[in-house]
Image (cartoon, rainbow, N blue to C red):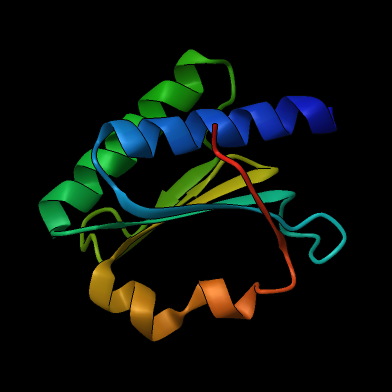
Length: 115
């Protein structure tokens, strides 16, 4: 199942890239957390772009057979979290990403290549 989840994380990363997200990072957090196995982090320039990215991720994940368990923060679109079980996607506006700094918090995680 682990190999399948990394593929889903890559699908999410591709979906955010298709919507021109910035600073895309895919982290392998297996062994560091029981929350998930992979995080995909990215930034959008505006609330409109953050919502477009979130919508694209949700559609793409469901299309590929991984149901979205929940989505939080969509209406405010400052930080949208998309829970796909073992893959969690975080879509930030730049200010919120800098403030919450998940990249630093999860700095022990292994960064994976998106391609």
